[in-house]
View 1 (cartoon, protein in one colour):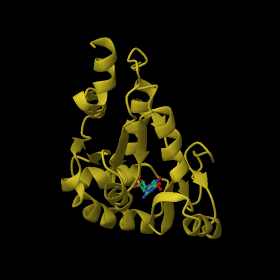
View 2 (view 1 turned 90 degrees about the horizontal axis):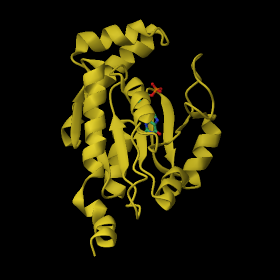
View 3 (view 1 turned 180 degrees about the horizontal axis):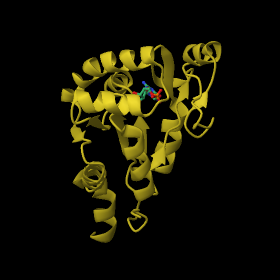
View 4 (view 1 turned 120 degrees about the vertical axis):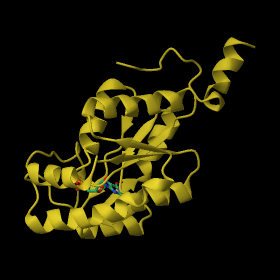
Amino acid sequence: MLNESRLSPARPGILFVVSAPSGAGKTSLCRQIFDKFTDLRDSISFTTRPMRPNEQDGIDYRFVDRPRFEAMIAAGDFVEWAEVHGNLYGTALSALSQAASSGADLLLEIDCQGALQIRNALSGAVFIFVLPPNFTELERRLRGRMTDDENTIVQRLHNARAEISQARWYDYTIVNDDFNSAVHDFGAIISAERCRTRLLAGFVEQHFP
Ligand code: 5GP
């Protein structure tokens, strides 16, 4: 378990943005990271996608219908939103403002379109892309999880190529070949970002006046 409560005064929160084609293992990786960094805040996205059997409303996503989602767009409730595989997904502005006001670090698991919107709207976020080792492995993983029908799998494989072409503008790339190594790399990125000198200016001022 890693947390930073020993650092006082608190530094500004960091926004970590993670993208990956489906099947790259992003969700499992993020789960491990939340276990390891207990003070890292999760952002629960809104989506119009139907709930999968293993999912819970309010934990995995906030599941809403399209009219409700569209009303939220009109009300300016989202910091970013995108249509992914035919469904709408969005990050509520309130998730960001709550984390910012408490100085917490926040991890967003969003697609490349949403990540680009964050990059254009905010400065200072850290962008991480998770790659599968290759396409054959990606297809094997997508078929193995048996939650999607054939059309969905074909669409996800097609979209994966476009998504992977976006990886080049991210700050970090994690290749999820060996899961434990990928968790290690992910953790190393978070730890390194937390040690940035500019974030620790308040700490240095207070303890080394
Ligand atoms: P899934 O339906 O497999 O959970 O997610 C499909 C895709 O939607 C993934 O690439 C995931 O990162 C993305 N996604 C999940 N939440 C959001 C969100 O709030 N905004 C955006 N832009 N994409 C999201």
